[in-house]
Length: 424
Image: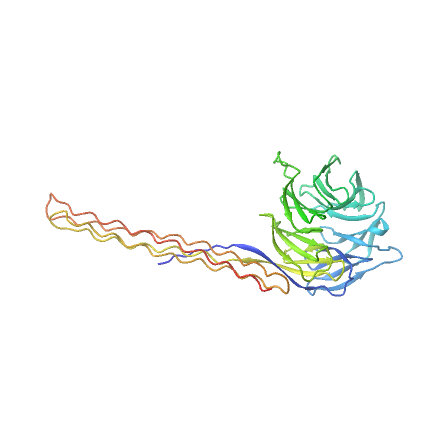
C-alpha cells in the first residue's frame, strides 16, 4: 500500500493587471501606506493619493500659494503612516503632510535640489539627497528637523540604509561611484566600477546591495557583509538588465526593476542573481516603484502615462509522491530429511506513488506568463518483505533450510511535473 507525503516548491509570478486612473501623467515615485490601503505618487507639481482597493485616485495635492509644490521626484512615509515627506525639487524644500487631513505639518528648508531619498526601516530618519549640493541631509522624524548634513557625495541619486542603520549607500549618477556613509562618524568612502549609478536597494539581511547601473544596462551586486573581509564593499555579480530605479519584495527574494528607456519592467531572483521575468507592455518611461506591504501588488510610476499596476503572486507546486509500498514476504523454507531446497525470495516492493503536479502559473493580461511551480519531491522507496524461516528437518542431525531473503523495496516515485506557465 502507498504511504503519504507532502511538500511544496515556490516561484513568483508577475503580470500587468491594469493602470491607475485619475492621476497626472508624469508619475515618479510611489510609496504604500503601512496597511496597504493607500499609495502616494510623487508627480509633476503634485502628489496623488490612490485607494488601492479600487485603484483610483481619491485626492490630488497640488500647488498652493502658501506651500507651492514643484516636481516631486520622491515621496517617503513615516513608519506609522501619519506623515508624508514630499521632496520638493524645484523649491529646495521638503514638505511634510498629515496623511489624515492632507494639511501641511511643516516645511523644511535648506536643501539644494532634493531629488531622491530613503527612510530607515524603523522610520527614525529620512535621508535626502541634495543633487546640486553634492550632499545628503538627515531629518530626525521625531522633531522633523534636519539633524545633520553629510558633504562630499557627488550628484546623489537613489540610496538605501542598512537595516542596522550604521551605513548609507548612495548612488552617484555623474560621479560613477557608490558612496558609503558611516552614519556614526559621517565619514564617506566610495566604491568604483559604475557608469551612471542611479539607485540602490539593500536586502533585509543587510548582506547585499543591488545597484542600477544605468548607462550599460546592468544591475550590479555589492557584498556589504563585513564578515566577508575579502569581498566586503566590492562588486561580486553583474546582471545584464536595463535599469533605472529599483525596489525589493518585502521578503527580499526579488528585486523589481524599472527600465526607463526600454519601457519595461523586470524581476531579479536574489537567490540566483538572474532575471526571471521581463514585461514590455503597459509601461511608458517607467520610473519609481512601490510595493505593497504584503507583496501582492506593485505600482510603477510612468513618466509618460498613469501608474501601471503589476500583480505579484506565489505559485505553489504539487505535493511530494507517497512512499513506496512494502516488499512481499519471503517464501517458506524447504523442509524434509535433507538440506535440499531453500525458501523462495520475497516479492519486490511496490513502486512509490508519483509526485504531485506543480501549480499552474498565473495568467497575465500582457507580457510573458508567470513560471509554473516546481514539481513535488519523489516518493520514498518501500521496504523489502521479510522472508519466513525454514521448518525443521525430520532428523535431529539435519536442519531445514533458512527462509529466502525479503524482496527488494519498491522504487521511489517520480517528482511531480512542473506547473504550467501563465497565458500571455
